[in-house]
Amino acid sequence: MADRRVAITGLGVVSPTGIGIKPLWESLLNGKSGIRPISLFDAGKFPCHIGGELADFSARNFVPKDYRKAVKVMARDIEIAVAAANLAFGDSGIVTRSAGDDKMTIEPSRLGCNIGAGLICSDLDELGSAINTSVADGKFDIRAWGSQGMNNLTPLWLLKYLPNMLSCHVTIIHGAEGPSNTITCGDASGHLTVGEAARLIERGSVDAVIAGGAESKLNLMGALRQTLLNRLCPDGASPQQACRPFDVTADGTVIGEGGGLLILEELTHAQARGARIYAEVVGFGGACDPAGFDVTRPTVGGLAQAVAKALADAGIAAKDVGLILAHGTAVANEDALESAAWEQAMGESARTIPATAVTGAIGSLFAGAGGVELAVAAMALHTQTVPPTVNFSTAAEFCHLNLSAQPRGAEIEHVVSGAFGTGGQSGACILRRYRK
Image (cartoon, rainbow, N blue to C red; front, side):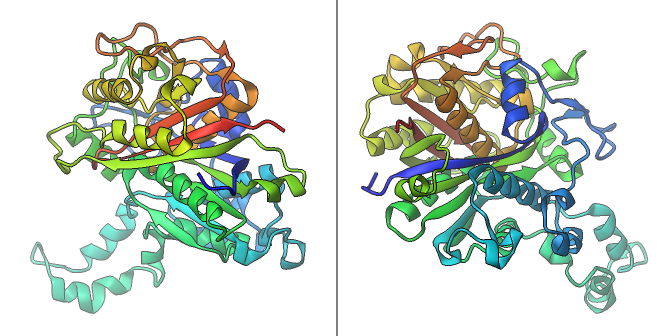
């Protein structure tokens, strides 16, 4: 990393175990899960009827009063990002345009935004009703769709479903006029956005960036795709114990929804305003599977290479790491590949360094996963505590990571966190303990 150091000064998390970093952190320490029967749609025809669903959630509670009408044109993914951003800025102490132009405590052009997003599912009822008006003699008529069917959609319909709209709404609400970017690389998106955001600060392009990711696949199309990929666990007697990363009994993941956004800030800028500093970002690496994407073949997207690059970027060895924050999808063949990747990147140290994964508590958040995982990594450094792996009991035969079902105190100087997407990308970040 460059001379300009990158501090983490704000954590904004929206998760199935609660809104905010505190509810998530406390649920992890207590071994609690937010998985429950799905109520957002009728999942009765699917083999898996449970998910990590947000309870009583609306972005209306996290936007200025004069912006609440805009919530009508926000897909759920966008609402999650907007809420996480509000929480992150509030946690950081940076006052943005959401409080009024005259109250901003950061120059708009020096505030950037990098947010990871997924493929946003359109409202099928809304889309289906419009399509029905373009059906003649039982067949879809493309000419009728162009002449009248499309007119049955609201004028701003498309703006609800573009992945870059997460960053768009966040930058408008908070007056972020610096560099803005959207990354759509599945589960790796959060790590990639945080890594790129750190680069912006190092280069002197900005003083602060909000970075991370958000997504909701808790919808009919999301459930269908994950079912066809055979990634979901069957319903069990207890929904809260269904998702079991790296465990010998693991039999699939659970769809969750949520996200995490972090405020990254140039260290002296943060110090000058007396900010609380959770940790520093000191290393970043990204990689991809050279074989490309094949839905019939599990992949961890070259995770070993991403972790190795992050370690090299931080200028540390594997032995200097005090915590591995693994991705742990609870899909057995993916967990096996991930465990092997950690050993490839970190050697024997991968078997002794304390490790954890958060998926058992919240399910798979896809593009929202990385931001949450890095927020947990920052909390682990800040509190010098290794949270337990929820629902972990006995390691699968292939897993040699040092996981535990109990919280552990530890001397943690560095955390390495890595994630991968089924599309073949991966990302890894190194966080360092902040010392005054």
